[in-house]
Length: 449
Ligand code: 2IT
Image (cartoon, rainbow, N blue to C red; front, side, top):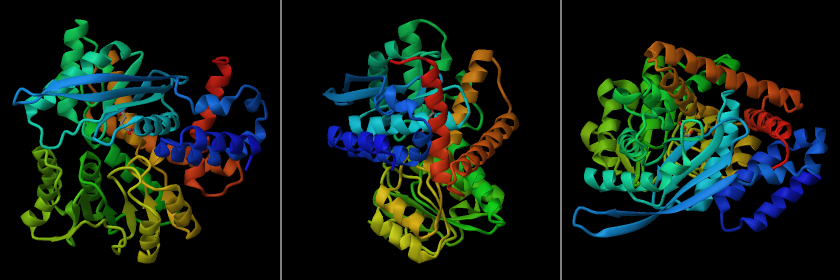
């Protein structure tokens, strides 16, 4: 490994030892770009690597809200504006009790490279709060979102920073946050948030975009190996918006999603969760209940439920983890290899520990990295921003055509960039190198700061 890269990683490991997810992301990206740093000794002089792993800004704020019984609760909110060299900061907001600076920083860091890889003019950021939306009433969610936005609104804007949804933040939460932003600023700036409802500037296909994009990317990988997606079986984890989009597109493409999972286990549906509109849409119903429970699916459709287990090890052609970070550890990776599956497409952000990733790679599993595979979501968010600034509404076909173009382009750029550095067909290194290259160039041209 390049000595400058190594020293920056070693330093990050000790400096950020209390933020293990962030260290993991830094190590993964920087070790991939080592061959590029070999070719650019000038980067060390301007300390480019330490600059690229240091957020431009990290905002943290208090969020107080009242529950339905009249009691007050205090949470912490964050917005990490990681890198703005390519455009306004862009990235989702996550509401989950495990949110702390290490989670927000890793997500924001990954987002920078993902966004760069889309080829669109956006920087990277991420936000969230350690708030647990599970079991909260609609009124409680609204009060929390309003309080969150009251603290955040002065730091964002259509040309400054454009948040969207992530875990625990969907169309409903974006609506409440947008309403509060508009009320506070007294201005119609709907380009400040993406993932909005269609009635006030949302984009068609945005809810489906991450899942659809992942399937389009998978299709490119399969084509490379001369295989057809039709008839392929897929094990998906998670059951949220992203898993829903995967199932919907799998249905169109004739592939079969046989598993979905929740925090308390997974279900195996031999006919396919993607076998009918009713089943696919049932995922939305479960999500809307706000209980974060997957067993309802097996009760409703009479299929098997596996408590406290993950679907890794099921006999399928393709794995698509789409729940959360580090859901696939070394043990899970071993099961995946044993199952005989050939393809592993990361859909959630950083679903794989670095150890597990290395194991899968050594055992010749074809890996699609999350920052490429799930980039369709943010890609369509940028289309939403374009429609808002142009005061236009695109048709579903127009959005979908652009989404397919973006995913093909991400795939092609990744393949070509890995080849350029003599790495062969390496989609992980290719994505990291391509994203990094673009940000590094823009930072070099903008001077040292
Ligand atoms: O991880 C992600 O890319 C997102 N949560 C969506 C980001 C966005 O701005 O649409």
